[in-house]
Structures are given as structure tokens and as C-alpha cells.
Image (tube, rainbow, N blue to C red; front, side):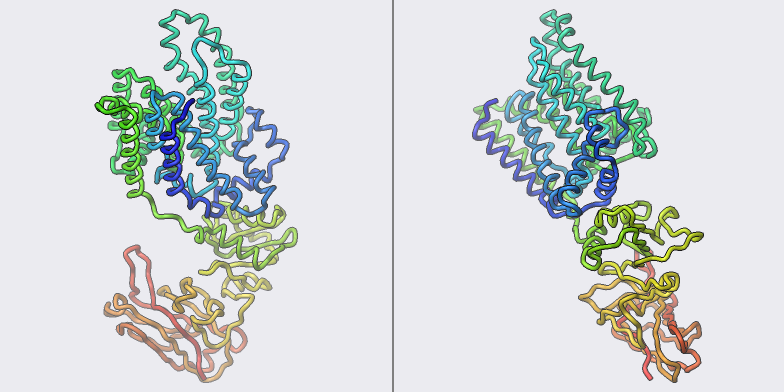
Length: 614
């Protein structure tokens, strides 16, 4: 394939656009999907994982992606940078390979470049760019395009060589090992043969010879696909027991899902319904047939075949269109190529000028609709791993950790996976209070925990583990003792909080309270005054009837109206009998008729300081 200098420059420009939109993927930290996938690959017997690469009937979940996780974890440990560099480079390699495939089957170089331009990036594919957890889709793309490119070398008059047939069979196995949707590759190869080769075979009346050439290969691929579906897909626990992956053969469901995905491709500027989706597909089919354009027919068939596995299951994020989008890109690029060909200008200047205009328009469209970038600093995996690595470089085997609260999704096991992978130790026990029952402590078998953590604005604080139940109840920190005065400017502020005070920003020494905030102090019983300093925004102070009541050990000591905008102070006397002589004195700050924001969350006051003076 001869490539002109203009074509190389055009491809370089497209790769620059890809880099512009996706470079942040190089800066990301492990995601929850990464933790689940890496942990599963780490726990799997390495010999089993190796065999599953070729033994496509083994019930192993997506072994090609599992091998990537296993290799990078073994080589680099719990460090995401190498994996994320590899995953991003795979996007670049896939773009180049997609161009080579478009080039192999397109009528012109301009059509191939336009097809790549139309499918290069998309804002709804965000998980593809910021999470290595989509490695399965990247690998499916890789092996599918490689298989189609290799097959495109076939001339209808000659049988593929045995090495080429073995290569295609291997690529089909690897495609299936990347993702269940990889079973579409044999179907795509058959579709390509029927659209690009069979018409010529029929004209030459060479059907018998043609069947002798292709039947052995496609019979083998059919058996391979059937065995893959019946033995791996149906018996792999991660697939068989997950309702979201269970397919439902329904044309209504198929049209519903395809309509949803088409709407995603337009950033919902056009919203497809079942009728409009069906009409759209009918019009595309009719146009391709009337124009007798093989690229358009194959592109539409490619889209239908590759989207079907995900159109018969629960709705998925937009990145599942990474491969199906190739078909639509080929279809519309071929259609645009027909229109461009009618422009009465020298064909080289005309073709590449059209490519440049289309590329600029597509890039502008994506830029206008691109979602806000995800900040990896907010990754719960990153926050936990960096703090544990800093504060606890090593944990003894069989350590027992309890998390009273955390920043991880409640149903997921991401926190457990993160801890065990960080220390490369699956004997560490991790339990969570704010999680489903299967992750909570067993009340019938209480444990003595080595470390008890609670989430805070800057990461995690450790509670006193000598009596973890009491520490959880009163939020007793291990590293800070309490006295008689709390101040939001001090590091020990959180030690005074029992409940009802929001997480803080170190650069802003104030904390919002909820309508019912509880604080604790350690002081001796003597006549004292409780004082507090707080700030009221105008939208809190302007509502009549809003008050702040203060209770010490359950007994009210005073109430103050909340009608003064700006800085406020209060001071109430406290009798010695209201102070706990041996233990914590609890103070409640309760706001009546609290401010409620548009999201329905109630707020109290902005607290700066509180405590006792003698």
C-alpha cells in the first residue's frame, strides 16, 4: 500500500487530535474497575490464565485483559502509571490500525481518513480515556481490526494460505478472549466475504470453487464461536451470575438500546426513539442498496453485528460503542466520498480539502460537547493508597482493618481490593460499617481491630482501637486528645467532633454544621461558660424564627436567635453538675427551622470555634 506524503501528514494531524482529547488518560489513577479486574487476575492461577488465552472453552473471565493486569501488577506492583501509559498507547495503535483497515477496503485514501476522523474520539467514551478498566474494549478493537485487515488481503480467486487462516483463527480466539462481543469477528469476516467477494464469484459462476476455498475456514470459525458461547460465556461465573450481562432476545429491547446509543453519539442533540431508530436504520439500508456501495453496506452490517451483543443486555456506558462506531464511520465516510467525488475540482486537492473541513467540523463538535475532565485527585483509590503507603508502609499478615466510613461505592469491594493489592496480601481482613451486610462486622463474632479508620476531608483519620465500639460512637481519634476548646484552625479540630460537622478544607478554617451537631470536650467540673463563634450567610439569617439551642449532656443551657448576618458569638453559663467529671462532656448545637438548599440538604451554621472558659 503506497502512502503519499499528504496522507501521512493527515494521519499525523488526526493522531494529534486524538492526543489533545485523551492525554489526561496518562495522568489517571486506578479506578474501581481496575481494582476488581486486577484483583481477579492476581487471585487466578497463572497457569490457568495462560491456558485460557488459547483454550477458548475454559470458563475464565476475559483472559486477554486479565493477562495485561497480571503482567503489569507482577512487573510494577501497585503503581498505575505503566498500565495507564500502555492503555493510552493502545488507543494510538488502534487508531493507526483502524486507518490501515479503512485504507484496505475503501475506495480512496480520503474516504479512509474521513472514516478515521469520524470515529477518532467521542466525549461519551470517557471511561475509555480515563480508566484502564476498559482494556477489554481496547483489546477487542485491536484484534477485530487486525483480523479484518488480514482477511482483506484475500483475493476471491485464491484460497488464503494456511498460515493466514491460522492467524485469523488466532485473532478470533484473542478477540473472544478480550470480550464476549469478540464473537462478532467471525460474523464480520463472513459478512465481508459475502459483500466484497461473493458478487464477483457469482458473476464468474465459480460458486463451487469458492465454497471449497472458504467453507473449511468458516466452518471452523462457526464451531469455535459455538463452543465459546456454550462453554465459556454460559459457564463463566462473572457472566452467568450477573443480571446486567444476561441477554434477552427481544427486537423491542434491541431497538430501545440502539436508540439510546445513537442518542449518545449525537450527545443527545438528537434523541432517538424506537420508531425513529427503526426508520433511521431502514433509510441507511435503503441508501446503501440503491447506491450499491459495498463500503456503506458493510459499514452498516458492521454496526448492527457489533452492537447487538450490548443491545440485548442492560444499558451500558458510551464506551461500548468504541468498536461499533467504526461501522457507522465507514458508512458515512463512504457516503461523503460519493458526494465529494461530484465536486468538479482536481481530485487530490478536492479530497484532502474535504477531509480537512470535515475533520475541523468534527473536532469542533466534540470540543463543544466534551465533558469536564475528571480530576484524579478525587479518586478514592488514590486517597486511600497514598495515605496507607505513607503512614503504614507495611502491615503484618492477617491484619484486621475496620472502616467506619469511606469514600468508596457501597456495594463494591473496591476498598478491600485496594488494600490487599497495595500490600500484596490477601490475608488482610477489611470490614466496613457503611456498606452492605456482607462487608460489615459480624455482631456474633466481634473482632479486635488493628486499625479503625473514619473518612475525613483530607483522607482518613484513625480512631482509638482499644474500645472500637466506643470510639465509633464518640469519634475518638487515636492521634489527638481533646481538651476544653476546639478551633477550626487547629489540626485537632476533628477530635472534638462526634457528629454533625462537615468535612473541612485546610485553606478555609470553618466548618458547616448540620441542624444537629454534637461535640465532645474533656474538662473538670467547675463553674464555666460555653462559648462559640460562628458565621451566618445572609440566606440563613434572613429567615425569621431560626434559632440555635445549646445543650450540655442533654440539658439546654441557652438559645440564641439566628437573625444576624455575618460573624456571631454566644456565651452561656454552665453549672458544675452539668459537666462530666470522668469522661467526655457532650455539647449539642441544634438549629431550629434550618436552611435547606435546592438539593434538599439541611444546614446549620458555619462554625469557627467552640469551647469552655472558666
